[in-house]
Image (cartoon, rainbow, N blue to C red; front, top):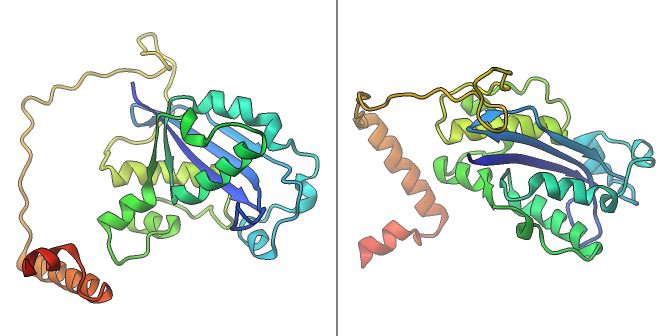
Amino acid sequence: MSRLIILDTETTGLSAEGGDRIIEIGCVEMLARKLTGNNKHFYLNPERDSHEDALRIHGISNEFLKDKPKFAAVVDELLDYLQGAEIIIHNAAFDVGFLNKELERIGRPGFRQFVGGITDTLAMAKEMYPGKRNSLDALCDRLGVDNSGRTLHGALLDAELLADVYINLTRGQNPLLVAEDTEDQAPGGLTVVPTDLTGLLLPVVCATEQELRAHDEVLAQIDKASGGKTIWRTFAVA
């Protein structure tokens, strides 16, 4: 059964190489594309103050973090939890860069050594919605995910929102429900309900003339922004 972990971090600033540190890690587990409730959440003492711009984003005060554990104290628990799972992150380069730097500080291998793979939902969204805003808030609005409780960034809340966004991006239609205890359960506490799809007929919906024109306009905008160097223009010339 595929195990997914949706992960998000909050940091003291934007530059891991410049000395900024992780202050919060939020992880949400999914099995068979449903939330299990087996989540992980850490606040961390970064041993430095957050930048003012970062404070305005996450609202986690330096004073609040002073008595929290350091990354080295929770790393084994975190890596055991993540072991072998597919990790879903929005703008993965940012979070993985910070995790790699924290691991490097304590003499541990890079983050990818501990997980089954990494999926970047920002890259997915850019491919699906070229030329549009693809922040987490923008995707929530576009995909109908309720983010009304997100007045400040928080790692666990953002991971929960991203789980719903990921299901929508991958066209999952099942609701995100925490599995209930039943007598007939698969490993991990999830109820398995077999579904016969042999008689399912999928309709083929062709694009309208208006949709085709809109598509051509988007391609033209992308081509213009690239200075005429898009792949389809290159192939057309060739």
